[in-house]
Length: 233
Image (cartoon, rainbow, N blue to C red; front, side):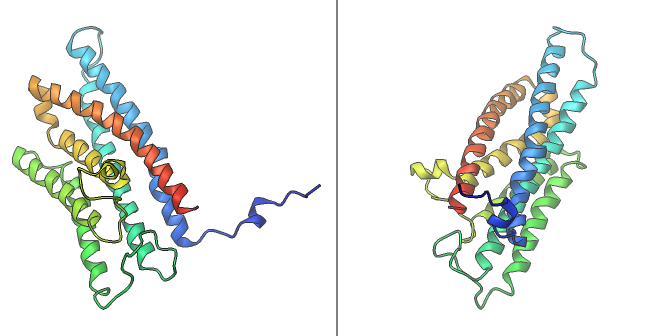
């Protein structure tokens, strides 16, 4: 009978880059998915209170907005972690690059980390600014700036996207494009939160967008697991 080999002895220890690869799914599993469940639940309470179905406290409205802010910020941070890992993985030597044909360190490499870091800082700063700014046009500008900064980082050749053509079926199976669309929907909800509370049309749009958010979260869980399995195959 073959003796059992302890797991620690059967596999080599994880490298720093492999540990970094775990941060994105770890943040999603431990924070983003539980918070989105709580946000949806409180959102249902908000609707029940507005319709007078249950005598719920007025605090459910601000709680729903606060949960949405934490959810959106955590989602943006998770995307930045995944993009950062893609850049570091493609920059490292070796034949196990995640993207076939992705450029390694070249003559322009000393300048690229600074530009990429500035793009990531701009995305995160724009998202955090949404916590503070009050004017509608400022909220719209910061939400759009964050979304476009994530797009600019994601369009780099180091980031696996499957396809950039929306008419191609593989485009809709891309983990990056699904995550980018998800971030856009969450940023819209965060930026338009005051207007959603007062305008019925925006509330209906918010409800429809949240149904798409729930669908995208399920799809992202599937495509994320798929990509991790392919990476470790």
